[in-house]
Amino acid sequence: MTPAPYALWGAVALLLGPPSWALAQLPQPSPQASAVDAARLYRDACSSCHGKLGDGNGRGAQLLTPRPRDFTMGVFKFRSTPTGSLPTDEDLYRTISRGVPGTWMPPWENLLTVDERWALIRYIKGFSEIFAEEDPESAVPVPPEPAPTAEMVLEGQSVYAMLRCSQCHGPAGRGNGPSADELTDDWDQEIRPYDFTRGNYKNGSAAADIYRTLVTGLSGSPMPAFEREMMAFPGGRDADLTQVSKTLDPADLQALEGYLAGQPTEAGLADMSDAEIGPLVEHRIWSLVYYLKSLDRQGGIFHWLFGENPETKMRGDGR
Image 1: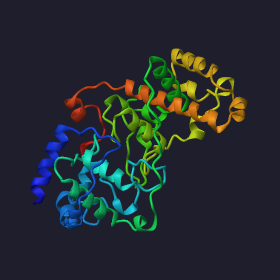
Image 2: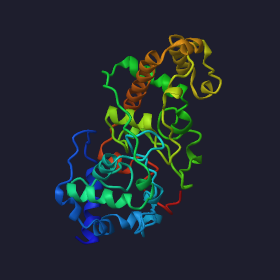
Image 3: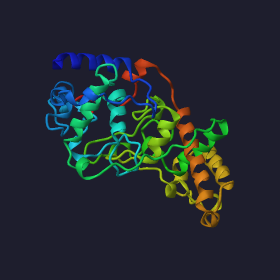
Image 4: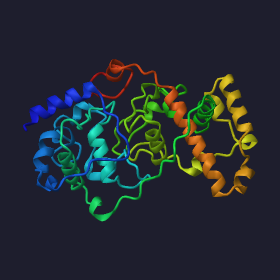
């Protein structure tokens, strides 16, 4: 194939939107996968954005925001592995297949064969020596999804407030927090907090996908992993709400105080075993997941393409 058809069908894929992807049952490469000309495939399908050397400096990269991924660093946002770890081959396969909603990275599921996608993974890993020096850690387990309830959504709103998510993502989750205009990634490029009201998450929109994103973080970005120490915040009368209260209206602050009143105190947390803290943290994360999903406006394809998203804009547009 020539570059033109790839570019054309990539644009069509963006218009159609990303497919739904599960974490399991990925198709495996056939014995003929090793015969795929991965270098030509990368050149035709990927190099215009990601660059011939995989450094994110393709001929169109300067016009795009967010910038295409620099593969030479070995740093990938979308993983099932712990923060700081390399992604698995399966993680890379999912990203190539479903694309990255809200960016210029299209889904390639229907444009490239299974063998071509696995061949691209092999080629992309060759841009960074770290893949030859390290193995990815084991995937972070995602526990069974509980049934969502209105009570969990309300709890999630309080967890959102306690973690000060509004500092970046805004009090209503629209990506317009007070720090939103000051954030940069590991390449010193401007990066915007996600607008949760869009709903079409880059790393998957299913509840399990969002859970996984929260607990693994987005490497290369300011988004941390919500690990146990962060989620087991001191509750009840021991919580310091000085900073949190500045971003909440009186009704939300009252709801947060009511939630914390039923949580373990700092001394209580210190006395809890890992077996006791684990379910507490897990419940808080799922509650946050359901709260974030409750913010989705479900605006449809035109909102997905042209809605209030600071990304997928061309550089030099006056921002």
